[in-house]
Length: 410
Image 1 (cartoon, rainbow, N blue to C red):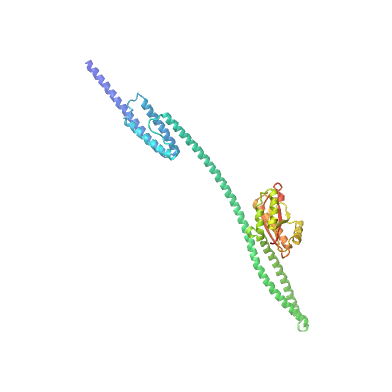
Image 2 (cartoon, rainbow, N blue to C red):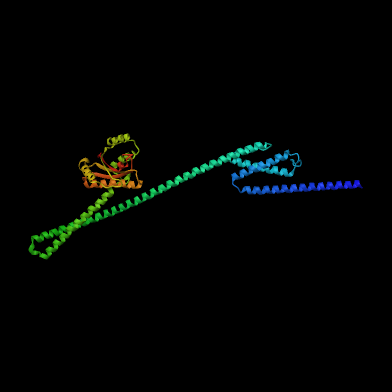
């Protein structure tokens, strides 16, 4: 009886061990299933990340998986985890699939693929660390490139703003010149009408003068009232003629002002074009080179500076000495047929657009004064070169001037 009880107790013990074994296997299977399910969820979450973060996470997963495999293969306490285990086979297959995907991404990024096989985990970890350092270096480089691009974009935006301001200034200046041109064209039309009116008034005056002469020669045939009416009409004709003549003079002066100033090289008289080009290229030259270039202008172009008019800061007004100097030049220094070219300058202090306008006003003022004094055979034109430090780089006021050039007729 004791033997049977002992055998039954042993059988119960064996059955309990078997049950424990089955329960343990079931728990292991459940845990493995949970691990597999968790791995799938992690994979789905990883796919939502950007490529660089995805690559880093996959590297970490591979390191963990390789560590598990390495420890499982060396642990004698787990003899059931061998190459024939279905769960282990599934993990190995998943590892190989991830290795292939990782290698594909590494090749696309220009990195060498990871080798398979039984490479020591220390070597794999070292290689992964090197790859991570490479990725970090690339990330830093990309950040530097982005910073450079941002700086370049900021510079381009500043350039665009500056160009837009210049465009607006040019547009305003163009509108002003267009208004002056339209006014001049209207003035030209009015001049023609006034000249026709002058001719009509002249004819009327001549007729009235003849009638007055006839009345004076035959006083008996003309009464006092008719004679007074003729005299009144004659006086009105004289006054009308004077008014129209003065108006014509004013309008012709306005037309001459428009023609007098050259806004650009294309508006210059042919004799002045080459001189203007050569002077424009002299900006930034050394003083010794400037002296040589000015000498060449006299020899090659027949052009020389007669005088320089100085101006106060921000002013284009001529002094009495300037006016006297212009009168002397018109009378003595420029033969008929020669061209007097007056070039305006301004210093580099202040706004560049305002300085360009100031230099043009200086040249125009001097040219208008010279035009009022010159002989009919003399020619004059004004142009500007804007800001300069050609005449003095240390004393700005010395650059506030007009040069009066004589260009000999060829």
